[in-house]
Length: 630
Image 1 (cartoon, rainbow, N blue to C red):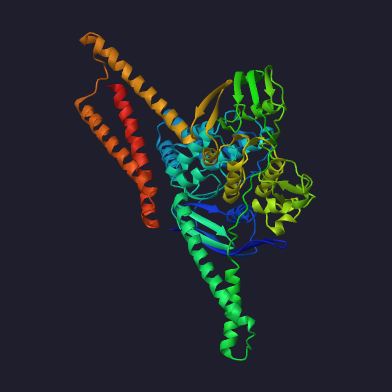
Image 2 (cartoon, one colour):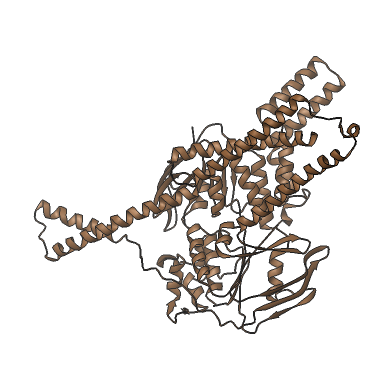
């Protein structure tokens, strides 16, 4: 069943064409991601589909009767309302249905008349029709997971990140049939992202979203739509499958271009002999020559520049942090923290929003002072600090003018020099974009430019606070490549787990209340360790009562809620069923990452994976109930 059909859609702003004649569809149950470079109109396309913008030409149709939800990249919420007013007004039909149902129960309790019985039945039917039975429970869960606790707080007092989370909570609570999301993971901490990841993967909601989070893409989406070079490519499968097929497509294109190049050389020799285009054959061959010339010129520049910037010299002494403490009233950020940074060290910082990650970086660079303790910085240390909110740019300047204000040329580690224009090309600013006013750039392009302005100052201690927000995947790959070649110290704060795992080997985990744990290894390994700790804790809690009961006299050891014979059989059966489901889940995960299956098979396996996870949750919950009773 088709939920969305987009046909021959085009959109331009002035002389800039965002996209032209694009066509694609989204079927019921699809979880679709749109992938394209910054500035190609991803956000605009979502706004057009959601009805917030108008296209220049083309048709959009959505299935009649479906409820559509839209999460904007930067939501515009009514500042005069509180969080509670905003959320409950948005879900007013559900809230009204719940209120009517509760009123009907109360009236029925007072007077069990035929009229009140009909009122009750009507209210219950309405609850059924809009699936409002679990809305209060869902509201509590969603608001809690997104750390939205003070519902009486005014929208006007919220930060941009808090507004995004409120808007996300609202659109999830509305439970639409078709959900459109623009960068849903921005401004979420890693725990929130993992919760949202699991929530959407299990949900029956049809999705269309733009996100740069590659782990999120891989675990949630089963359909990738890629916009590249004015063309649209559809991939039925997750992000890993998309990468495999994209690599295969590019290999085919390289071979075709190479063949065209060989043919072009032969045709060029013929053209140089100045054929007279008198015959039909000669005219056709000349036309084919120009087509071949165009095809051969499509070949990408294989001799791509490798940037290894000549950073400021770093001495033996880096930074020693001794007994640092920092707090704001009752909020403790750092509590007697000690650490000695080493040359070339790469550290990732993770933790909940509000745990003090950005404050720690400001204390480290001297932008804010600590309450107590000492920071001993080496004389050769040159900080490069990219802040979460980005860099203020003079929007009247052209892109290349902004860069040239810092340096006309950048010296590389091998002594070679590159121009500001070449540096821009490396980070995917083509010649047209280099001379565009900064005011005309997209949000992602502005962040990319701000990052470049930090990187080209040749720091030897680089601090990046949420650098991945609003960047497209192509830019992230370029940034990763640059940072892998960077020889200085690197600290990264990011919710992008893929980005972090690729660049760092050591994590500071901000647990709150000034506690900072240290973890060596990848983020995936850290999560496995934490999950194992939770599981072990559950097992030990369940095991303790059993041991104590064995030591008690027989009469006292018999609990009132002892399992019946039937419950015992069910308990034993559940253990075997859970074991089988876990084995099936592991098998499906292996299949999904094997690359051996076609798109339809992958879709079936992804669907079965969701069913297995639901069954596991259901049976594990029942097993825990019986286990506690035992």
